[in-house]
Image (cartoon, rainbow, N blue to C red; front, side):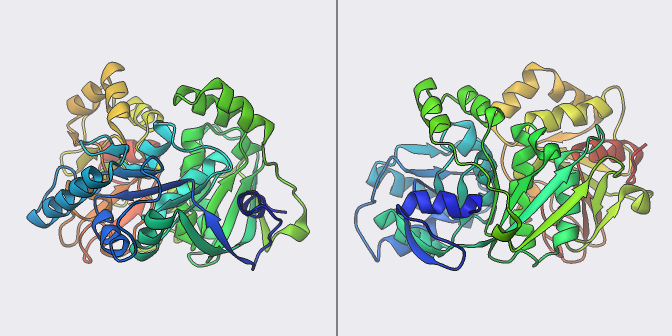
Length: 418
């Protein structure tokens, strides 16, 4: 059985396989400032009481602080819902991006079923969980009953091998997007493995799971291991619970017959990858697009706004200035990461280089605020999507890269690895 099949089987109490339709119990349900009001509307047509006020997590991250009266009014609705139903876990004051805050605060654990009203909920599969996004109507039902249904997905196994200190998790996932294609994993689970994946820290593994949706994936799962448990310990999960998780560890049974197909590649001789407009699977080696002039560079998002990402960016910005023709925006993925960056002096480096630093949150990724592009402008971003209009303008172009390439390019004013 695949990891997806095993996790879902554990939840329903019997063996289920790809193609089976099942009703499942949700362990954690998450909505944010952009999706909670619609979820509340659906919920109120079903029930007047949430199923469990300790298993719902609500986070403000898409428009924080509110940039329009509409966004502000949506946040009012959400605050009222939290008070009315006594929701225990909420983060409303710039705590960070939902997909960073959930694991950072210890809400995400292996073997869980996690439902989120955001397509990048699949990020949490990096912890050996089955995590996927739902629409507001489905989330309203989850809030009311704690249950949902799904069809057990088929699985594509992605084996990544080799060693290359220049290759990050972002390069690996962009290469995967190219190999699988933008719809090649529609309603499937991507199961990542191989020594190159096992060698990644959690912040890099989250990048792989985060972008499963960019291939149409339902989930992106990595087997839990000692790296996972170490992260959980740092996130405040009790030693007793971690020991119990280890005891009930779900492992990979890597047999070809389990998978829809298997994709393999070696990173040993691979160069850094760039996704070109206007899709994440339009991927080329950095040397093929070197010299592309940039109006803006954005380092942040639920893909690459973590502390290690900021450390890497600062390494290449220290003592240098952002090109006079290029804007650099840096947004830490959470308040905790922001605090860490302040403590380590990273924010000083960014400010001295000429970068703009914004409140932890999604920022310009969805095209709402904090860096929307103008007509004809070109941006290099560490985000997960570069669809036409993604950063707020259908007449702009967005390229995707790792934080290292983004920082180097911000100094030069064009895409480069030099």
